[in-house]
Image (cartoon, rainbow, N blue to C red; front, top):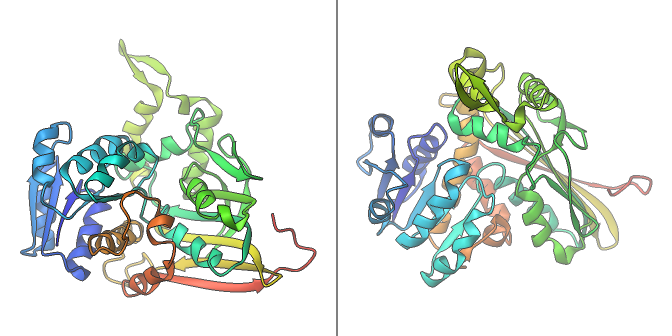
Length: 395
């Protein structure tokens, strides 16, 4: 098997490539990236004969398609803004594909994937990705589902890379149409910082206040659990407290609208200016606590009894006590490892369906198969099942 890692020199994608080197059965691992210097340095770092580099410009379509053709799968680690373009090229190259974001542009190319007998899986990392696997684990064990609440804490600097800075401003864009909850059979649009809820994440993260975010879990789980009668699906998230304070202030002052301002006679978006500053500043590049934490609550019924499943996840500490998980790597590896695991399962034919699929459609029948693979790498899923008291509300 051969895998093409598009954008593979990025901070998250290189960790996915490392996982492929350490655990996968791929015989060829190609890093395709526009940044030749970084791509070459990743090849040198990995020091494995299966890994090589090729320079790729995704706007040179014919050249990129030619370079990807012949690979079994493309692991697409490019930014949100590029995913429509890159999916177009993956489809044309006749490869399977997987990316981290999953915001919907991929479905325009579904017929091409089907015609080629290939699969595209948009949005499979930690969130979205592992979150849906945890929710489906619980839902599969219930006769009916009343509510699903997906929550996560993403503890990383606000702008350690351009794509992460882009994600930050994207999720709290006041005009974004995809910030929804699923309620009583309908998708309901909400504003930034809507529906605050106290979520206790596993230590060392602890108590957090989380808000609705525009993640694909709300939409994909509504589709997957339609026959279970689900009434409520909410997806929340948080970043380090100082990040949240900054984003809240940017929102309240209208800066997230990114309106044009005049600077030295040139017009630029005010948020673009701030993002550039954060990318170059110590404050934008560091935080006190690094890592990831998931919290999934699924409430439903089994044999007439009200049941709550609470699933969380933990990973090695970022304090240097576990080699390879120091500092920022405790965040990037959490995202990258599920990404790499799903890519290999797809390349091996474990999905068995063609077209553009949600994580639930691809792996939702047996999501628990992911858990031991992640545990082998230091990522643990914890499952608690408990009865719901009669006076407790389902939703």
